Length: 237
Image (tube, rainbow, N blue to C red):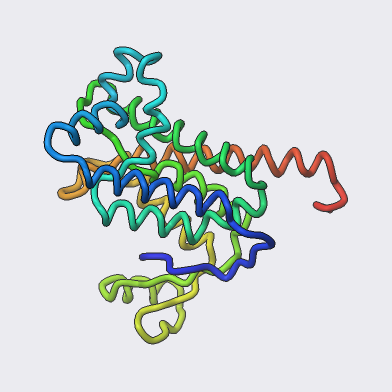
């Protein structure tokens, strides 16, 4: 299932979201200009490599962040940036510009570390913003659980979805789903793949980074809501 947009209005421009998109695209375009050994050295320097990180954590510490701005191919970049576009603007709107940036970078760093903890001896580079975006999705499901997400449903999933939700699917396999259903289903897939045996074609996906990022989003936003409730209890009465 792929999200196309949500029905959640925002109250200001998503400045940080668009800056992050621009940075990710810019880094990817720079990557495409490199050739041969230069590409290898660039990835080696800025990607997160668990074996190198746990061998020299101080020297490699920055890769917890820099790796989140690298992507393996255009499809990888496009998917991540689209998820950030759909879910990130409302989180930035609620948290504020600079707190959202800090939240995004923290989510990416912890998600990357979560992957490393489950693959400490791996020499395989980890790249991509999906861990940080998983944190955004964890925030979204807590802050906006009932907001609707326009979702593209591949035809093969339609029978299961119809039986589960008892809804009428509109033309072109598009359906509005509550965020708690869409993101909850997404989170279940990540956890199932992280804890289950490797699946053919998905063994190069950093499932634990997704789970770790999602957990960061849940925890940070829970603390945020608790602090807001203490400061303004009448708002939550």
